[in-house]
Length: 88
View 1 (tube, rainbow, N blue to C red):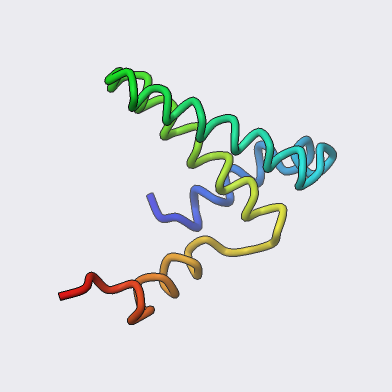
View 2: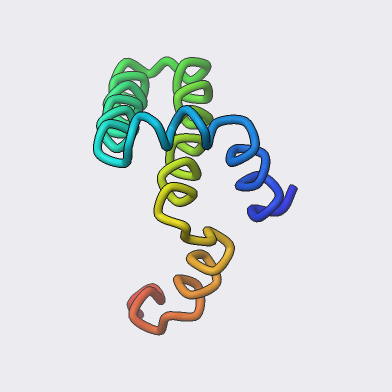
């Protein structure tokens, strides 16, 4: 699945409620999910980590939607940024 297609699915499903919640409260939810992912990694629970990775990705796309940022552009810019290349 392409990033833009996934971002549209997230927008279609969640934008209305996420927009009503607001960017700041949505960012707090995102931070909570990152914390849950960190806890799953720390505990070695791979299945829980898999679930939390999904949550983190969906909340990240939600934040991008609220900010009106196309994540496909973000990824392209990141991959084309020479400062992001591994050091030799």
